[in-house]
Amino acid sequence: MTGAASSSVCQDCGACCAYSPEWPRFSLEDDETLARIPPAFVDATGGRMRCEGDRCSALAGQVGRATACTIYAVRPIVCRDCLPGDDACSMARERWGLPPL
Image (cartoon, rainbow, N blue to C red):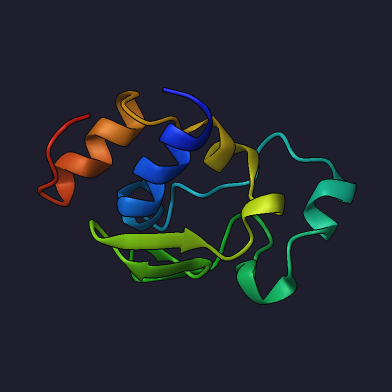
């Protein structure tokens, strides 16, 4: 699934962004890329996105209904790599009781 179809699925879901506070880690980003992420969304150690419980602080909306990433254009690589229907997506959707894609 690509393009607008995948964006629509993600905007209806958001489960991957509310799966674990350990998941949205920075691992492949360079300093310039990290500097573009608003500091309010970066945890105190600087090693990952700040979360509220299991939910990324940049996620807006209700999981499984309508969501959006408030920093979509500068989201971390781990977030960019999660694709609709892949293993990470499926695991997060299952945790939230959402049907597989």
